[in-house]
Length: 357
Image (cartoon, rainbow, N blue to C red; front, side, top):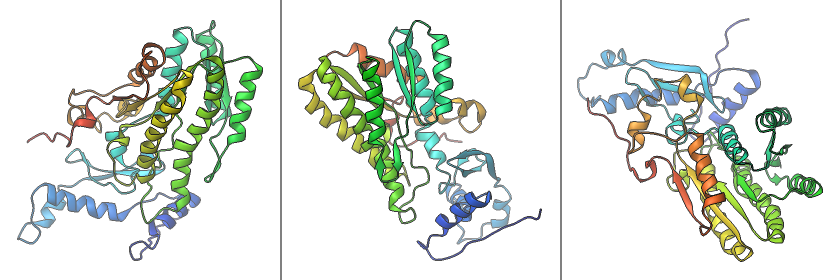
């Protein structure tokens, strides 16, 4: 089979990236944003203080730049571009943002797993949901074996029927199933999220934004509504949102995700007022960076992240998030409408700490 290279050109906003991504996905090709490569080189010159209007040796500088396309490390199917020579991340376009990994390296599966183990180890019965039926069945089997004295039920359910429509019928069926089994959800932990990777203003269709908003806000509201109705009848309960510190500080080209997390906090506050009279407490945990297996696989990439992006020089792991959720669920009797940030102080730090040479 021969080698194919397809280049798309056109004016700003013409849809080059959208068409290229779609074509690459359909044909199984590698998508490369050459604009990001150009900006990588430009940033290198700016960062090192070169003035290209003067007589600097451009060729000599270019020879010091090593740009590596790491195809094995992807987020949302997009390639990450690194300036390996400086050890910094320069290209920011369609990398689904390595900055996601600097400001928010979050594995939803890991958070769910650790939270589940935390509650199960305390003797709490567990009902968890997931989109993939096989993964749900596998996890249910695993945790039943690990916690034989705890009733653990996994339910496969998707959040959306399509970009515009939340699967409300699926939620109704889920709670009808629990009602039939006599299971009361005392604490509802909401961790469903669509990160909206690579979404860029002017380039993504409106349905992309709607999909993120519907998953992160409308879907979670739907779950809250059905759970809270039963909590009201039972005399109270707890709702805990796993939000994000991006509700406080935005990151580039993540307009849908950042907006959804801000909206989710607004939802949390409104529910606090509406449900308080029924003894239902509503709170939110806001993680920042979270240490996952991605760190272990890319030690050089994450080497300086904790010291540069958190005042305490450390980042959270799944256990830290689970402990925060447990606090709201079991230890904070008089706390509702609260936001607990678990990010090592990243939110209060205005700029990353750049070590001096």
